[in-house]
Image (tube, rainbow, N blue to C red; front, side):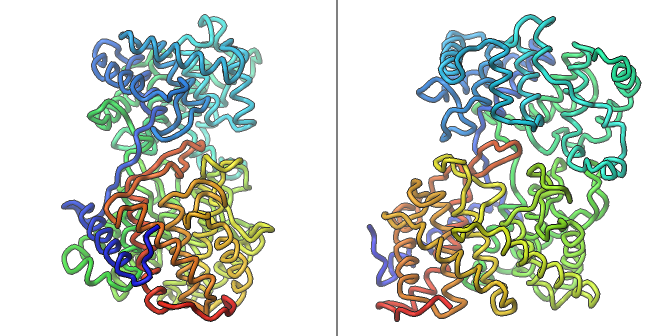
Length: 618
């Protein structure tokens, strides 16, 4: 392993990585990134195009199926990314797409391989077994099992049309006729995020199989046109619901399957799919994470206090302008979210969320700490975050709720990020809002203390690891929380004990090779190693640290230098979780995280060229 004991290898790797990160901006005012190609997205998009107009879209569909056939795993199945292990959901959808539109011998061979994988996994391809296997996978959460079963039915994989729909649970699309206010009163705020699928998939199932109950039959018949109009109102100007190819495709194929292939929603959805298909015939899980990777990049470049040098003058001002322009200034037409937040993307299908709002606040603090316009934006964002806070003191992603789904339940990493953002702007907020923000941060600390696991770790909400038994990622979650708590340390003595326990767990989770995976023993990745090194280096900088911690950081930095080929190459890992726990990787994550980690490690190791005294972390 490379040993950066004289820091020269680390310095060189950091210089190359920072230069590469700056170059990845291109000519725009921020970063766009590139999400991994998704077999699931590609399969569902191909099926939708084939359903709406098979003749007009034949070349695009054929290219998509070619891509799928070329990217099957060796076991015959597909995972969510080209680096992922095979899973039932994606393999079922690819198998169904081949049934809908296969034309080449390679397509038929791939479909046969998929069928063999499914038989080996669940015992048979009988409709009853497929339906029960999906229920076993997703439980009571129907937000993804029903769309999968719907596509299987439309593609003929659940038997003849007259019998196929018996295996697809009905969805109460009549809820789409209710206003956001009524959904909140009924404690159904999460439904608003699923409305496009609820309406379109609920209606196609109703079209093919009417409910036996006469009251339900009348209610659904009465609300059919009204909910279709609601669907049209909800569709973003770009045509893509949440900028997501799967959700948009499920909606388009459902409309076409009930005799509405020319409906405006279907037409705009198909236009979105044709615009976002990649040259190789694939689609990503979402169009981009441009706002998220921009704020991450800014914070990474600012980690060592060198932002003025790295992002000078016009480039810095353009990035500030871009972030300010992306803040929502009015209620969101899709989710009814109040003004003040940011989404993950700069495209019209995004919706505001807590993590991106906190990220934008911290990026603006680094970019324009004295700007009155930035202060006003942060003030609006602080109000938005405080109003979003759950009763348990934690932060949800999109809406306040009752802890039932990822949309509305509190997450430790989100909560810590929001606490750091509010703390960073606290002194600049108006007096009354400052009081509310301080109280909100206090409640967040209480939530983080209570949600810390008995071993000292925290879990991340939107990140996981396929090599961990329950597919969680305590290394990523603990790194995010420890990093944020280190920022609060001097002002919040309550964080001292949980911070010590988190840092100790993170240190103990280091693998023998010097890197980190999702937990101790999981294969080390650049992303997780960089997150852990950056977090521990922040702890080191915030307090008197032990020689053991210094050595831990040194070994982690050496692993990064070696496994990025001295800052030249950054292989991504599928640790990201999208809606419905779909895996993705982002090409910029390992680069961004490495710049942040090496920046912070450089400062630590420059002060400790020899063994440090064995004193406590605090």
